[in-house]
Length: 511
Image (cartoon, rainbow, N blue to C red):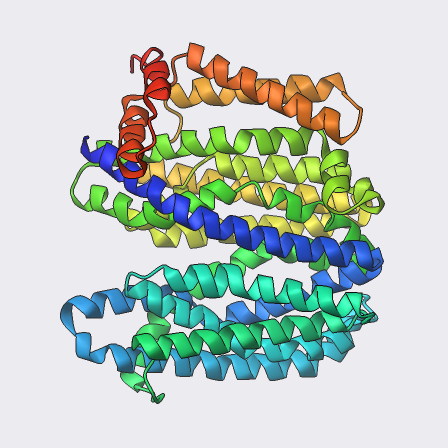
C-alpha cells in the first residue's frame, strides 16, 4: 500500500470513529429539537432556537479560541517541556472559566434588552434560565481539548457527543411526560450540562489530565491568548455565517418565523456530516504530506476524500432537495412544511460546501490559516448585508439565500487561495465524472415534480442512488486507492470484500 493509500486508510478509520459519535450526537440533538418542535407551538420553538443561538455565541466568546489553541500547545509541550503542561492546562482553564463567568453575567443582565430587539416575549425569562449552563459547557469543551492534546478521543466521544444530548433528551422527555411547561426545557438543558461536566471532571482527575488546583501563569496566558485570538475570531465568524439568519428573522419578524425557518435549517446542516467526520484526521496527515514536500500526495488525498464525501452525501442531498416537504414532515411535522423552498435553497448552499471538500483544513495544513479567517470575513459580511436586504422582502427564503451565498463565498475564496498557494484544487477528471452526473440527476428529478409522500420519496431516492452508483462505475471513476482502502478494511475486520474489490478493479480509472 502506498503513502497515499496508508493516509486514506487512516483518514477513513478516523472518520468511522468520529462519524459514529457525530451521528449519535446529531441524532440525539435532532430528536430533542423535533420533540420540542412537535410538543410546543412554532413561536416557542423559535424562541428556543434564539435562546440557544445567543448561548452558543456567548460560549464561543468565553472559550477565547482555547478549544483549538490548547491541543496544539499541549502537543508541542509534550515533546519539549512536559513538566509545564499542568501550568498550561491550569492557565487555559482559569482564563476560560473567568471569561465564562463574565459572559454568564452579561447574558443575564442583557436578556431584558435582547428580548425586545428580537421581538421575543420569552427571552428575558429563558436566557437567565439557560445562562448558568455556560461555565459548564466551556469546562467540558476545554477538558476535551486537553484530552485531544494528549492524543485521546474517548472523552470527546462520551462526554461531548453522547452524554450531554442523551441526558438532555432523557430529562426533557421525562419532564414533558410529567406535564412540565415550556421553561422546563432550559432547566433540563442546564442540568444535562452540569452532570456531563461533573462526570468529565471526575474522569479527567482520574486520568491525571486535570491538575488538582488551578493557578495562572501570566506569561503562558499571554502566549495562549495571542495564539488563540484568531481562532476565536474565526469561530465567531462561523457563528455569524450559521446563525445570523435566525437572529435577523427574529429582529425583522418574530419567533414564529424563526421556528418555521428552523424546520428547514437543521436538516440542511446535516449535509456536511461526512465532510466534518472525515476531517478529524485529515489535517495532521495533510500537514505531513506538505511538510514532506509531497504535494502530489496532498493533491491525491484532497481529491479522493472530496470524491468519497460527495458520493456518501449524494443520497441525503437528493432526498432533501427533490422532496423537501417529505423531509420536513418526517422530522418536524406538517406545520413546518411551508419552509420547503427555504430548505431547497439551504441544501444547495451546504452541498456546495461539501463539493469543495476540506479546503479549510488544507489551508491550515499548508500554513495559511489566516486565509480561513479572511474567507469567513468576506462571507460574514455578505451574509449580514444580504440578510438586511432580502429578509424584509422575502422572509425565510431571503434568509436562506443569504446563508447559502455566504457558504459559497467562503468556499470559493478558500479554494482559490489553496490553488494559488499549492496549485491544488478538487476538480480532477474522476471527480468531475462523479460530480456532474449526480447534479444532473438531482436537477432532472426535481423538474419532474414527483409527489406521493414519504414512501415514494424514499423509493425514488434509493432507485436513483443505485442508478447513480452504476453510472459512475461505468464512467470508470474508481481508483487504485479505493482498492487499497478495502484491503486495509478487510485485514482489520476479517470481513471478505473480494467481490467488491473485483467489481471495482474492472472499472478502474485510466488516470
